[in-house]
Image (tube, rainbow, N blue to C red; front, top):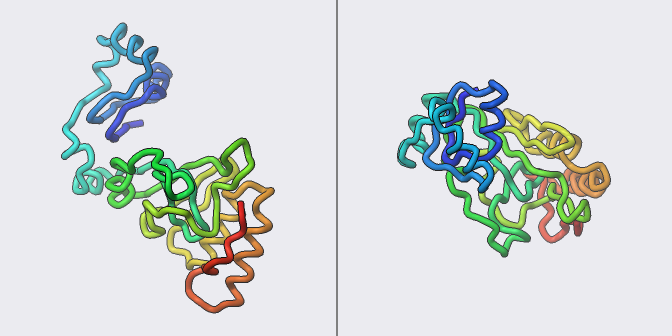
Length: 202
């Protein structure tokens, strides 16, 4: 694997040691204390895998597009339209900025977002009818992944996109209310499966 990213984190060292990495391009390291000690104690080995570039290059739209990067970003919640909230819990509390995810999602060959299907030990669904805050629109999300499966959202119409997200990515215990929402939306003609003010409470 060749990693082209903004920030290098702990798992990269495990992948390098396992012989799975050819190279890493990044602009910074965000290692835990243990990983940082490991990195510097074996610097002669690890330095052969890393090249550091300024953010103007690591997040460059032209370079991301030219290299055909497969971008994998994380999210807090996703909706059945394919939109992703990656920065605000419940739409109001800032968890973190979107950083380079916007650059990578917009300019990659394939834009993938991965997130757990639930939060608070399974009490709430991370797959919802409409996200509480939009960081990435459906135009920037090609593939959505949770621990339950993969939804390929490329070149499908909005209702099929919603069906794939519900059946492949939502936790099974939350699928029925999402299905009911989608079926009700179908009876209210419109291009997008949206029922304003009628989102089920997760």
